[in-house]
Amino acid sequence: MTEELTKMVAEARPYAERGKVADYIPALQKSNASDLSVSIFNVNGHDYHAGDYLKKFTLQSISKVIALALVLMDSGPEKVFAKVGMEPTGDSFNSIAKLETMKPSKPLNPMINAGALTVTEMIKGNSSTEKWTRLIEFTAKLTNDETVTYNASVAQSEFDTAFLNRSLCYFLKQHGIITGDVEELMDLYTKQCAIEMNCSELARIGAVFAMDGCDPLTGKQTIPKDIARICKTYMVTCGMYNASGEFAMKVGIPAKSGVSGGIMGAVPNRCGIGIFGPALDHKGNSIAGLKLLEMMSNRYGFSIF
Image 1 (tube, rainbow, N blue to C red):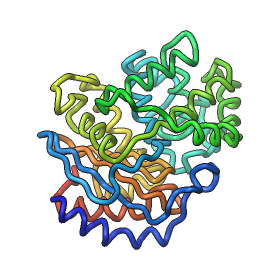
Image 2: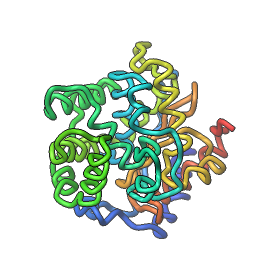
Image 3: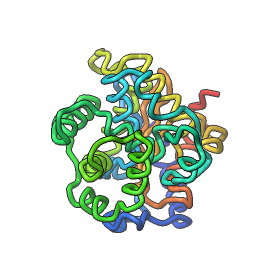
Image 4: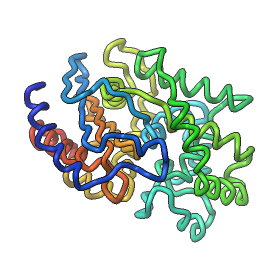
């Protein structure tokens, strides 16, 4: 499989020329637009790679899935869904439009920024530091790597320029969805988005979700089955921003992207996938990464539909 993946990466890489790296977070502009790498972690414990798969990148919106799983474990679906909905938006991930027209004014789902900020505030802890410690320890548990941390310079860059996210927070605070200090939440959220890992580690997290929350190596139920199912459902319906419908048609797996160019995939009962390709299309998804996933899905029959 490694040889096949290497060929597919070479075939998909030229698509990066049609995209561009994220520029609204200054630190992400330093990425090499032509990078493309992939890891597949099979649920039997075998893994396969192509490209510079050990190169680290920040999770950005992929972290929303991890935070959602933790908060659902903390508080249960009923409490979480009192504050965030279950529907795709059709709008960009950072849009405020639906908040103004929905009654009640709660985010439509936890994969858009408004919903993710709401979820992150719900992480249990007596302080922002305690919440962060619980989140990063949970992430480390999913990767089986206690050294997982965040990129401080990317987090600071996001914190300094997150004016739209602050606007979302204050709008949500006006309507009682967010209740705490906005600057503390922004500090926690930007650290969350700046959690850093490589394709191999990301694929391992994908494999946990692929196995309904069970770690394929240890056999431990890291995430309860019903919560893993909820997360995967959101990945299908909302995981690729407002391109989720097209992605379901062309690739057809639960997946979540981030504006750093990362994509995490979870093929039920088969494998987890980690991809990094920082050149983005106009909707914020890795343009070469999407093409690579389409090739892989066609070659290996990954689609769940």
